[in-house]
Amino acid sequence: MISSFSKVDEYGFERPDDFDYKAYEAFMSRYMVILTRRSMRWNSILSQQSLPDGGTMKRFVRKGVPAQFRGKVWMMTSGANFLKSRQPNLYQDLISDTSHQNWDEIIQNDLNRTYPDNIYFVPSSDGKLNSLYNILRASARHNTSVGYCQGLNYVAGLLLIATKDEEQSFWLLTVLIRNILPSYYSSNMQGLITDIAVLGELVRSKSSKLDRLLKDLHLPWPILVTKWFICLYAEVLPVETVLRVWDCMFNEGSKIIFRVALTLIKLNETELLRCSDFGDMAELFKQITRSSSVLDCHQFMEAMFKLPGSLPSSKIDSLRIRFRQVNVDR
Amino acid sequence: MANRGNQAGTATAAAGGAAQRPNGATQGKICQFKLVLLGESAVGKSSLVLRFVKGQFHEYQESTIGAAFLTQTVCLDDTTVKFEIWDTAGQERYHSLAPMYYRGAQAAIVVYDITNQDTFGRAKVWVKELQRQASPNIVIALAGNKADLAAKRAVEFDEAKGYAEENGLLFMETSAKTAMNVNDIFLAIAKKLPKNDGAGGVGGSSGQGRRLDRAEDGNKPASSCCK
Image 1: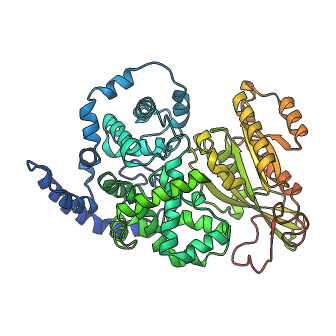
Image 2 (image 1 turned 90 degrees about the vertical axis):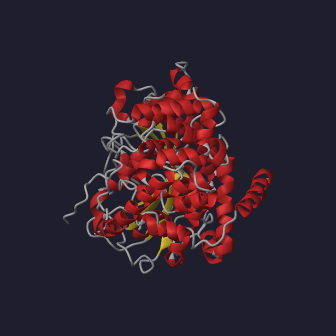
């Protein structure tokens, strides 16, 4: 069909062959209006002397941070600015450190395997690959409990695409690893394993039928959702949707990751419950991240704060303690 | 961004190109087997699967996070064998998740890169772990991938073959890039898997493929290759 949309999206990603241009066109005609209005509103709050209070900020962020302000706003809301202010020269020092570490080859190995379908990451181009290498290498040196974990390449790559700023991307990656996420990327991935168990428990309490079905099909949660957590939905959901999720994650913390998962499951619950086969279920968990309901990021974000119901941090914290203990005991 | 389409899953009739095409034989049973790919990062696990399932090759294959799930069907005489394939992440720290994928698997392909001796060492560790902890009847194949880079060979064919024989593994050198031995290794596994009538027959269900009735599978083409 004829479409006014290019084969490459505004972030440099090639659209897949089966991309639904029609649904996207319908969505964009609505979304452009919203984007324009949000842009004006953000312009006005960012030009004021002081930032709005937490409640106003949360409301603003949930409605979406305009692309041109993302780097700046993420740096403010996540605490990355604060980290940077304590070590203003750190990034420059790290990238000028020429000493060799084992991580360097492993990172190098993954560079050409990061978004090869994005025009800025085309292998052996002079796009953003060198910046990506610098960020990951600096992170491995600074965040020594993690070093480098596969998956960080996708997170750092998308940070770079969104902020267009190498140093900001480093600090945002660092604040994720150090403050926002509980050790997802450490060598034993304890935080990841715990959080996936927490998600399993949240699903059990909200949809016991699905929980039972997955058990009957011998499908443990990590098989279905490891990539969701590790990549923070980069390389999983459509890029605009991921960025809207990240707007909230940098402001409200890691519980947002659960909200996304619960919303995906809730939106597709009827269909999921119809699965009676291991393979079909595994396939469906892949498909639900590409449906038209996630492509419309604005609608998806609205659903995200409605469908899963209340999800206080205190509840997540106590579940994390409970399941961390279970893992340790096992 | 998420969907380059290369991990989209079920193969279509046109794509696979796998397997023998026995003339017109559509009768017979369908067996379903779980197969897992293991091996060091960047040895070509995803590329082998992509070649087998879609007949494609990307010089720069995205790194796999967690695992990717794909299916492909091959025909053997009167039996249709459907592989449910788990292609896993290679980095050592994902190791603790691996048992979830090989538990209950009837077959495994342990992959190394013939140009990198370390990856062969890592493959041996995987084989040992499978022999100890996977289903006792699991069929294990060893694949020395990147055979097209023989000029940079670091692992001798005979060394790997000798090791495979000692350990009762199927063995082939493969190239996802040129397609050399890719379908063959999956076919060799399909041949070796038990295809007794009825699920969970002698020897318990652990090493046994699930037998499907045609009716149960009726909502999709029974096979990509039986016509």
